[in-house]
Image (cartoon, rainbow, N blue to C red; front, side, top):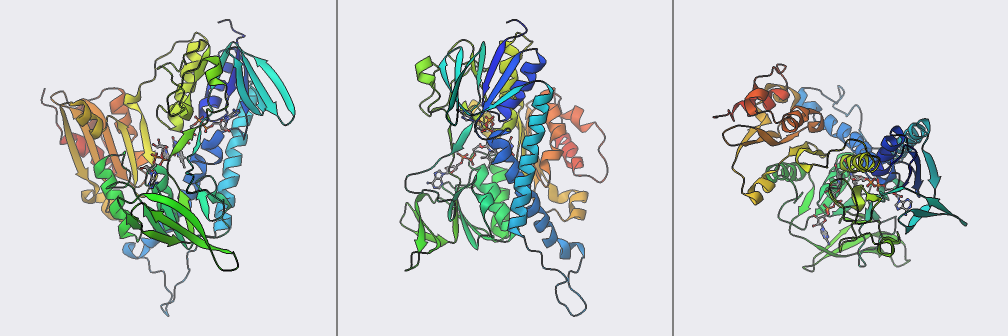
Length: 472
Ligand SMILES: Cc1cc2nc3c(=O)[nH]c(=O)nc-3n(C[C@H](O)[C@H](O)[C@H](O)COP(=O)(O)OP(=O)(O)OC[C@H]3O[C@@H](n4cnc5c(N)ncnc54)[C@H](O)[C@@H]3O)c2cc1C
Ligand SMILES: NC(=O)c1ccc[n+]([C@@H]2O[C@H](COP(=O)([O-])OP(=O)(O)OC[C@H]3O[C@@H](n4cnc5c(N)ncnc54)[C@H](O)[C@@H]3O)[C@@H](O)[C@H]2O)c1
C-alpha cells in the first residue's frame, strides 16, 4: 500500500477511532463514518456511563463503612448528621456530561491528526466502496481499505420489550428521573452484575434474576462466589437458576404504569417498580451489505476474522464487538490497530488473547489476566494454583476490607505466571504487576522477590507468588 491509501472506517467506537489514529499516523487518508457519536457505545452508553454511575455507588457504599472505622455519623442527640441519598437526576447528568466530554476529546484528537468524520449510516457497495446515508443525502466513498467496527447492541426478546420507562436496556437507564424503588435486573453476566450492585449501592432495592447456579457464570468461580456472597450480605435478592420468560408493564385500572412483572420459566412472577434487561448483545451487522460483498459471518451475525482482523474479503477488515472475539473496549482497540498496521504494511503482531487483562467493576472488583482456571481445566494443563485471601493482609484490615483474594496460575515446575485473579476494591489498579508477569513470562519467584510497600494490598500479590515457589 502506498502512503496515501484511502481508509474508510465504519463505526467510531474504540475499534474504529483507535484504528483511525494508527492509520493517520501511518500516512493514510482516513474517514470515519459514525451514526450515533464518536466514542461509540463504549463511550456514550455502555462502558463510560456504567463506570461513572458505579463511581457514585462506590462512594455511597464507602459511607456505610464509616461506623466500623470509628466514625460516628450522629450528633449529640443521636440523630443522623447527614443522610446520604443519591440524587439520581444529578448523578445521571454527570454520567451523560462525562460521556459527551469524552466523545469531544476523541473528536479533537481525530481532528488533530487529520481524520475526517462523516456523520451517517454506512453500508458496503463493494470491497472498494462504502455508501453513506445522512438524512436525505447519500454519497459513495472510494476506499483502498475498509474497516468495519460497528459494535453490538442490547439483545431484545419478543416477550420482554423495553419501553424506556419501566422496562429498560442498560442504554436507557440514564434517563431515569428517580431511583427505582425496586429494580429487577434480568441477567447476571458482567453487565447485569455491575449494574445490579450499582443500583443497590445507590439505595434501590434490587432483585437479580440469574439463570445459572452462580452469578457471573463466565468468570472465575471463586471470584463469582465472593461477589454473590457480597450481593446477598448487602441485601440484594439473588434468584439463582431462574430464567425470565417474559416482562410486562403493570398498569392500574386507569392504565397508568405502576410497575413491572417478570415471569420466570417455572411460572413464578416477580414484581418490581422497574426491570433492567441485561441478557446479552447482538452484533450490529445486519444491513451492512456483508453477504452481497462476500464477507463471511457466523450464524450469530458476528463477522469472521483472522488474528490480524482480516475478513474473508481482501481489503475489508473488522474489529471489536461486531466480531465477537472478546467484547472488551481494549480488545476492540487492539484489533483496530492491528488491522491498520497490517493493511498499511507496518510491523504487526497477531492478536493474542493469552495476555488480556479485564476488570469487572463490582464492589469488590474482579480483575483477571491471562489464563483462567476454566481454560486450564478445559485444556488439561498442568498448573499450580495459589490463592490468598485478603482478610489476612494488614492494610486490608486497616481499610475494613473483608472480602477478596489474590490467585495465581503458574506452570508446574518453572513457576511461569500464566494467569491471575485479584478480587479487591480497585483490583483494576492492583492487577498490573500480574499483567506484567504474564506478558513478560516472569516466574513466581521473580515476582515475589520484588519489594512491595508495607503495609499494602500489593503485599498479598507478592505473598501469593511466594507461596507458589518454583521447583525447577
Ligand atoms: C454495560 C457495559 C459496560 C461495559 N464496560 C466495559 C468496561 O468497563 N471495559 C471494557 O473494556 N469494555 C466494557 N464493555 C464492552 C465495550 O463497551 C465494548 O467491547 C466496546 O464498546 C466495543 O467497541 P466497538 O468499537 O466494537 O463498538 P462500539 O463501541 O459499539 O461502537 C460502534 C459504533 O459503530 C456505530 N455504527 C454501527 N453501525 C454503523 C453503520 N452502519 N454506520 C455508521 N456507524 C455505525 C455505532 O453507532 C457505534 O457508535 C462494556 C459493555 C457494556 C454493555
Ligand atoms: N467491565 C467490563 O469490562 C464489562 C462490563 C460489561 C460487559 N462487558 C463485556 O460484555 C460482555 C457481555 O456481557 P453481558 O453481561 O452484557 O452479556 P452476557 O451474554 O455475558 O450475559 C447475559 C446473561 O444473561 C443471561 N440470560 C439470557 N437470557 C436470560 C433470561 N431469559 N433470563 C435470565 N437470564 C438470562 C445469560 O445466561 C447470561 O448469563 C462481557 O463478556 C464483557 O466482555 C464488559
